[in-house]
Length: 338
Image (cartoon, rainbow, N blue to C red):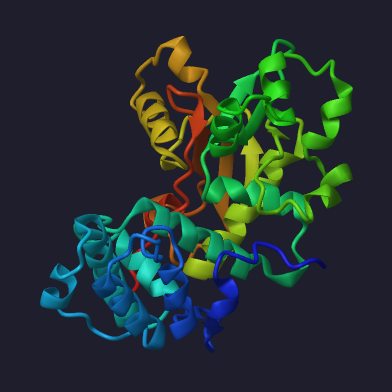
């Protein structure tokens, strides 16, 4: 199988006996090549000296006085943020433990981009070396915002938001943008840019381009694929086996627990659960519902045992899906682990 997501940093990590990821010096060095920290022609001598010290030993402590001698105050701030982030990374016994700690206590205090990068690394680890390319495209929902377009014939299409924005600024639109703006699937010659299981091998070689659209209608495989990814995500972090399936509607007078996979879905589900009636324009943002059932209920709260948990995914007012996979790790009805 082709190597995929080669630039995410996964290959610089090691795996411990719990099958969790462990930070290495090479992993820390990947941050030094990021735009926020890499050297540019204008970099001053002090910045170059600090950068070299960190390349030699990415765990070395740089004093405040040394950092203040960097001419560019933005670079000073970038290093200060990274040093705080690095300290928390190194204090955790695994990357998974570090990730879980981000959402506990007083909230996330690291750049969202860093969190997205970690999410991609975890998905790469979970899916391993025999991943299905269609599954990989759907996995991009976990760490990249998706722009949703509803075409005139009811087709629900999602494409990478950053890619759309970038192409929209170019002199000529790329195929995805043409497709989404066309409001029709009449241009069948563009089907290769809409990924589905039958043509999923086209993903190889373009796995870092984020230039495939996917169809999200209920009768398409994207939602069931996403459900299976959520199962794997929960199993990896929590050690809990679940069954998750797409759902069109909730008809459950004993509905007792739900969670949104994003902020918009959380608001919508909360309103419905509280027997409020959201405006139709708000309800139309709900892309899909899912039903989660636990295979082993020993860790489930007593009042929820034997009952399903309902999940929802929605787009926001800007037609963006911004998935928050961490919600499935902290908002399930589980008893505290002693």
